[in-house]
Length: 240
Image (tube, rainbow, N blue to C red):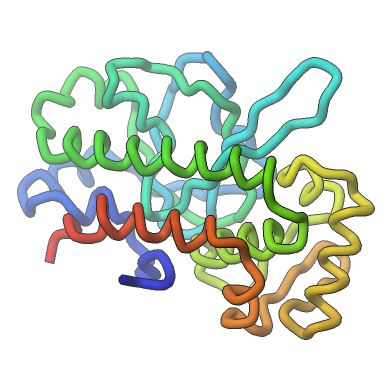
């Protein structure tokens, strides 16, 4: 079983397609930059584009009245933004925000909806990925309720590290607090503890991973559980 997500700078869903289907969908995609902080979709709004990240990552967040946004999951090059298309729904249930700058392939949502019958391999891949995404959302909800801040922070940093394809991510304490649904003071204490143990270096919003193995030992079991789901449902279907 892999201990991390695939690290190649491609998209696993597209790479899982057969040669003909792989080439056909690439012809309909265009490369775009994922700009940190950009909002790619709003909850329950029609999707104009679907995104297949290559590097960087997208955060799925939900908002409640009088509360700050709460992160529910991350999307990197293991998946896509817009997997609800597999259900025939042209909308996402959450807001999508770029949390890690990088590159992506995007495809017009109307075009894909019209031609999805021509991509049976992609439809199967979307259904598998949708299961993985639901598992991530469920695991994160339970993790946020039962686990302490420090192992949760370590888990989040591992998930970001897998998707960033770099040893550093940019995130302020305030944004991290929003992502974990805790007070900023709690994040500051947890990040300080990880830094004191030389697992990370944190300076002016720049978090550098110094000791990945140490983070894996610190993180709660939710990280390994999500990797196991990914390996079982997605990794074995990547085209060779």
